[in-house]
Structure formats: C-alpha cells, structure tokens
Image (tube, rainbow, N blue to C red; front, side, top):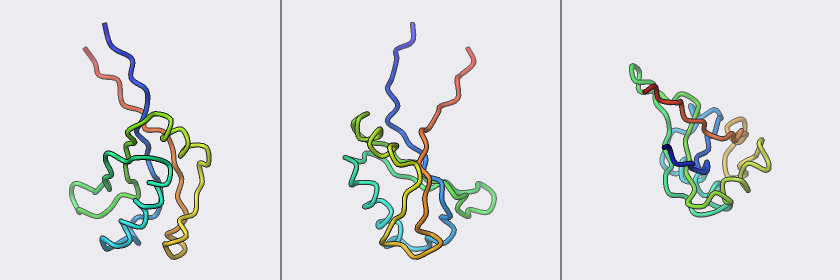
Amino acid sequence: MKSFQLVRDLVIKHHVHGIKDIQQSLRLLNHMKKFGKVTAFKFMRDPVTSERTGMAFITYKQYSDAQDALKSRRQTVPELTAPFNEIEVTPYQRQARKE
C-alpha cells in the first residue's frame, strides 16, 4: 500500500535567465522564505547547454507554508529588477511511477 504525502513542493516559473549571480538567487530565495521554512531550493538547468530553463523548485518544511505561498500564484519580487521580478508559483506534481 502506498502512503499519502501532502504536497510541500512548489515550482517557481519565471525568467531565471536574467538571474545570473548568487546575490539575485538569494533575493528570490529570501522572498519565498517569507512564507515559511525552506528545506530545498534548486534552479533547473538544461542538461545539454547548462543554461537555466526558467524554473526553480522549492520545498517547504510544512505543508501549510506551501499553501500560503500558493495563495497568490503570481507574485512580484521587489528585490529583483523588472522583468525578472515577476514569478508564478504552482504546485509540483510528481509523475506517477509505473510498477
């Protein structure tokens, strides 16, 4: 029997191509930390070119923190410059494994 797990993982969709240094990445992370304790934060990269794909994954310790972040799907990160300050937050849905 499979156990049920609450979704604590979110996908941040934005123009991360413009976020080129660690300081800008930390600004985005700090923005997401206002919703709760973050346990994982990772930018996705194209496996061939190593360029950022436009998505980042974030995991919160508590389910309720992830739900708070989802209350406003479209957010503005004031610490980043336009147009890279507009983000969209969506729940991460794991692919079902075939057995």
